[in-house]
Image (cartoon, rainbow, N blue to C red; front, side, top):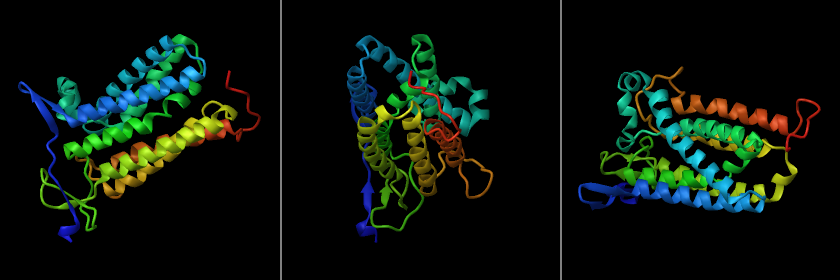
Length: 269
């Protein structure tokens, strides 16, 4: 079987400028953010938003994502260590980002933005989640280049042997996620352009949260824990625990958007 498995020994550094290396992860993260910006800018322009508002919105989101990703990892997975050593939180280059924290960072960033601009909170969330899967796919390819966020041992033909981590064939969970997010982006982009105008604000967000975090819950079964964590049971991981509230929130937004609570007021305005 080892002949059918993939040997992965890619250098995470593309090239060096002096002593500082330019890494694949940073490049892919930047490309993902840039493509997401261009797409959301195109969508919002078509909906009548001025470029100044779009640029301000993008800055809020980028800051919210980066801060949320880092704080999420530090506070969800090892809060005692990072609260005891707060300066370690700033060392992003050492690794450690949590997508669930990034989701919370986006929620807070959008809330701060719409509060100042007097816009619909759910409406702006509908727009931003449109491009999150695309950016996420680039991030996961970056994780692959770093040989991080790997899967459990696997006896399958497409297993990866990450030479930097050992000789054991593992699930390439980074690729699983990257492919899923890429497909999800195109599917949701089609849905947004075809159906969003007929939906209440927050309905698109609800579908996004349910699909994304149900997948995140399931993919955790193939992933190793990023840090040691004792869950509520031996079969539930931290990533799965953190996904459950987002799925519930998605169901709530669907119920609100489709009027399952009874008479539903128009919240598009």
